[in-house]
Length: 55
Image (cartoon, rainbow, N blue to C red; front, top):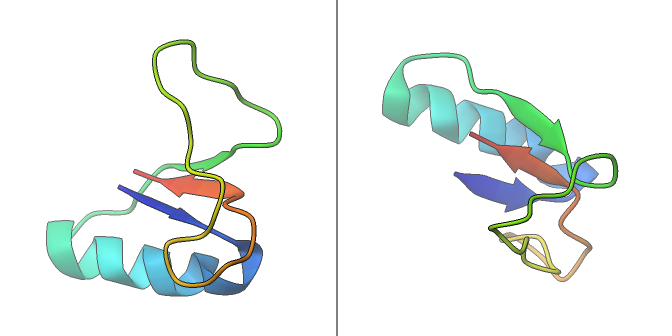
């Protein structure tokens, strides 16, 4: 699972495919909220806002 900004989305997809050998689901965190999970505020690769969840 990766939480990334738009700039690092492609890298996160590549990392997911390398690890799981399958295509990930991509969730836009500006449009979806989870009641049991709080998304990190920042991208895991930079200080930008974490906008996409790659799972």
